[in-house]
Length: 413
Image 1 (cartoon, rainbow, N blue to C red):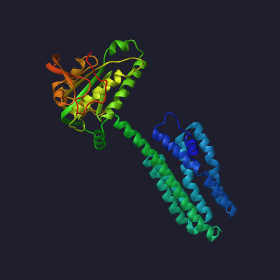
Image 2 (image 1 turned 60 degrees about the vertical axis):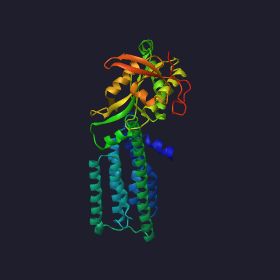
Image 3 (image 1 turned 120 degrees about the vertical axis):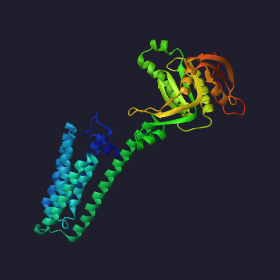
Image 4 (image 1 turned 180 degrees about the vertical axis):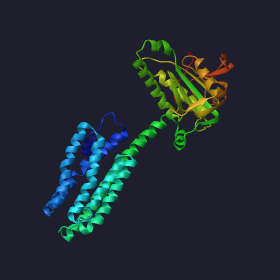
């Protein structure tokens, strides 16, 4: 049944359709073609009890809908298909009501016409739905007004009673099925959109944006920032095809993404071959520096033990700790970013670092010196910051403290 619904649902769908348009087309075809067995059955029953006019009306729908659906599959003119099918769904049950002598004698078969405004609600905009619901109400009023002038069909009382059950039960079942399918697909699309949003922005930030569109920026007094950069990237890139280069970087960054997730850190962005991570935003954590150094050691170990695109890569990694402002600014294409001197200094630690080394500032050293073996590298001149004392994080961890699980980590070259 699912395979049949999926096959029917592909009728008239264009590869360029949005998810919403494709869903509406599937619902239209499933609604119109899915009711054919019932309209055929109703036609046969009416014919068997001696009501040929009432039998001919659902019979017409049974014959017309496959032809109209085939035309839709060829032309993909959804507007015409939707309008003609909704019009038939609205009018034909009303005509059956008149032919059988009114609301009661027809077992309120006009309830099938309620599928018209329901279908419009799922397939069109709200303004169009208002038109169809008004039409349905008008037909109900006309049925009641014309009741005295109609000649009731000679139908057994038991038949009328059971057809009440069949008409109401069938329409409610179809309504539930359509809503169930629609809500299920809508929830799926929402989950996909939510996952995509969470891959771009932290959850707290995305939740805030859903409530109101505004600048979101907050000060964080204790944050650690990491920059990692491929050594010799420019000459290497000059010898590679663009797609080959992109594939190589994708392999590297996918590896790093897994490590970032392992330590529950926040990947900020990539800029060319540079990879930026923050710890302590948007949720503050006391071990922000330790967690980031653990990440750096595992990144070095992963790079040392893996060939990416058939190449052995080397990285420089720089870390600094301090206050930052973090958030999103602007109105379009949001990105969660960090600002402040602490960020600039972390970037300088990477650019002034050595190959296969994790270089940290004194701010970070004071936070991790009891957990990791570090070697003082003296004072270096940093553009824009003057003379800065730096350390290199060595391999291993100090006994009794939480360091990297990697055995092979950054060593001095």
